[in-house]
Amino acid sequence: MSDLTKEQQTELEAAAFRRLVSHLRNRTDVQNIDLMNLAGFCRNCLSNWYKDAADAAGIELSKDASREIVYGMPYEDWKKQHQQEASDAQKAAFEDNKPAHG
Image (tube, rainbow, N blue to C red; front, top):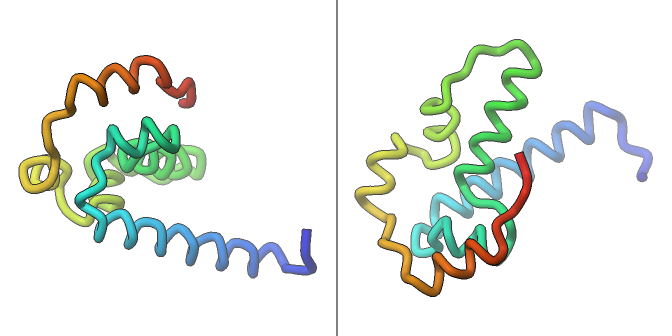
């Protein structure tokens, strides 16, 4: 590892997270199932990990609130505006490659 202080590392990680979230918000054409099939995680996973971190820190944060942080709007609104029905091929690929992360 480099000579970064713990504070510098945390600041850089937070900046990288914010950039990833911004990128995912702008790439509404990329469906969650495609992210899952290609990368093994999606926007929902990211929001779950955010909530897990809040829980571990003793910070109360609802699932809906963590999703809104990642999606930039209520999840149901995002789904209505951007989510497409998954194809049979996408569903089959998901079943074949379903990640086993929590």
